[in-house]
Image (tube, rainbow, N blue to C red; front, side, top):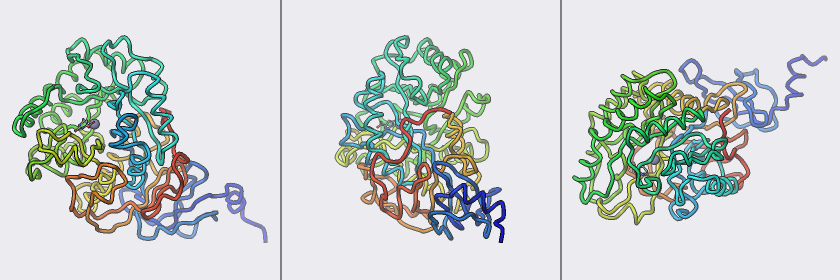
Amino acid sequence: MLESSATVVWRLMAIDLLLKDGLVILQGKPTKRSIAIVGHTIEGIYSDGEEPPAKEVMDCTGMYVLPGMIDMHVHLRDLNQSYKEDYDSGTRAAAAGGVTTVVDMPNSVPPVLSRSVLDMKINRARKQRFVNVGFYAGIPRDVTAFDTALVGDILGIKVYPHAPLAGGVTWNSSRIHAALQLSSKYNLPLLFHPDLARGKAASITEFFSKHSCKEEANAVAMFVAALQEVGGHLHVCHVSCASAAELIMKSRAEEILTAEVTPHHLFLSRDDIHGQDGTSKVLPPLRSRQDREVLWYMLCKRCAIDCVASDHAPHTRDEKMRDFAEALSGLPGLETTVPLMITAVLEKRMTWADYLRTCCYLPARILGLRGKGILAKGFDADIVVVSPEEYEIQGDTFFSKARVTPFEGRHVKAKPVMTIVEGQIVYDHGRFVVGPGLVGCVPVRKR
Ligand code: DOR
Ligand code: ZN
């Protein structure tokens, strides 16, 4: 009997991996489909009975099959702060958390202000990677000394007013203008930490009054005013206050003003700070319940906040368990973000369309990663398989070196069980099935 032409094409295509009978989100609803992968790329999505033959078949019955999260705000440390996190532990945490692309912040030690430091980070990340890793650079004291050799290999420029990137400078309007001119000239987003308050706070009360919502809204207002004059692309990191989110909503113009929110600002409030240690100490700080509700509204109903990013900021147990005033700010987020956000979908706080937009599609778009963030034919095969199972978050199960989490003990209803990067399974039910440095693109570049 003659083979049908479709069968002949399939033979020639040689499907490498078929994720069979999973729940793919089509038109906003989980729908049983199979995903075929050839090399690094999604070859097609097939209904039951229409799947092509494949070299390897993974049964995904009852599991959600989703694009991996693109986490555009993580601190993977490494270099002189490898004791907090390195590219091995940080990208394992990403893969285990359902995150297939991370973008690494430049406030490392040493900070990313020159091509030579970026090269050190790229080399180390290449050897240790389990997912795709992109990079940002900081801005030197003298903005005109910005190292242009960084440009092809970074995805954005970060304004961070604290050590080690503070540089003893004041973010006045001429410096903000100069930073936005860099964004405009090199067509890169200017990522901005909206809090210009400096110095250490001696108590919890002082910490909250120093890093207040007024401070956040003022900082956003200053940068937005400059954006309106200079142009460029301003991305506001971790919006935490209703007032700042409202300001962003009023000032949004297509493509040039974008914003992110963290899971800790969506799920926690100041009322969740128990005890005197630094478990929940983070910048920007946790805010009121009312702020939290406005953030959800701005993310899902008004789209004034584009996306979710973890702001994974690892510190050691000792650095977190000190008295609040002495503890360091920052929380691990790579292993909790996808479970928390999908739990929000399953509990009907947000829709599947909201999840895909805020955790996958828009981060890719903001960063200019055209082949990522969507599960469709021709896109990169960066995929997570998520089991709808309930479990308790436990920091001591994290692959990250940072295991103190304010989400300790929280029940979630979604567990990433298999992570596929560039078409290859890297993580499968708690185990890494490839060695470090074999899968993933470093550095991720715009395309
Ligand atoms: O709490 C924070 N920690 N907020 C930041 O923006 C930076 C981060 C860090 O690098 O530790
Ligand atoms: Zn950060």
